[in-house]
Image 1 (cartoon, rainbow, N blue to C red):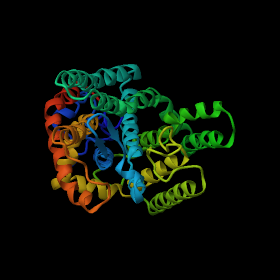
Image 2 (cartoon, one colour; image 1 turned 120 degrees about the horizontal axis):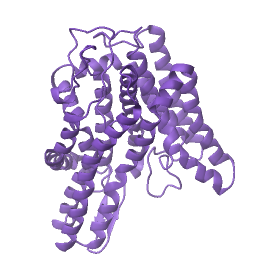
Image 3 (cartoon, one colour; image 1 turned 45 degrees about the vertical axis):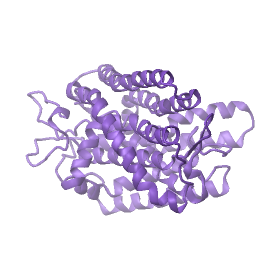
Length: 417
């Protein structure tokens, strides 16, 4: 999972003296004496950072709630007017691509070292249990404390039901990680055919869902919760496998692999075609305009993922690969490097706790201070965004400082190469 894993390092054919890993010393792995020390792939860190920040910002823009003293009503600010356009920036495909790249590097390292994938999976699960366990335990204590302090039951239980919804990602990540050896072998054997099948399967299942009557097809459509995200995950595996292949030694050139002009044109064409396909599907199909679930929509494009989401994922993967060189340059210097480095160490903590930070600020404003949230997309809403976002960020930084140690302990002990 992108927000759970630091990417395992690429495998150069020979040591590269000039490479400078983005990761702190605690996140790097000591290589065996018979193999050179390996550097992290900064591109995977950048993609993960973009995905994590995108999730946080999108959720923080959604804040809409009213409290009448008895009932907490929660809406979605992006469900008004042209707010659906913002949902087209949802970055889940980037997180799964980064997770796949991490799994690809890890699988390559286990094969090279003659180790089994089961041990890697067990280490991943044990490591993940710490920050997730801290999150669940803290929320259980918080619910008990808030109820004891007299906070209205309806508000407490509504927030308690919403906060763990982020953990759906964990289940999908576990299954895809378990399948990583199969997916890597599929790429090595069938190459682009494997990627084509990975994209076609969720599209075919979605066509069955809306083309055939009956409850069975609707139930089967939930398989797309796995299949739709397997496509960017496999793309990440393919990227890492090719980058670590012996015939393609890693240098500090940011444009390897996919360096040729033809490859760039193909990526650009793929991105344009995928965006166009997404637009056509929402325009003529049974799909809503929003690429996330919205109150009042008959269906959600994310529950389960639909054809527009699959096409959107293809576009995102093509775009980040197309601009890989520029992204790595931005992440290698100055403020960009510091931000990416910080998120590389605490991406899971940020992911788990960013909704809690928003709930805390909105809860204090509504229930504690008796304020009303400004109407979405109005002048007051726009003018107040910096203030609200600053409050969310301040609380989130505090939560990261308290709970980041669980993720830090994982990164310092868990070998990823």
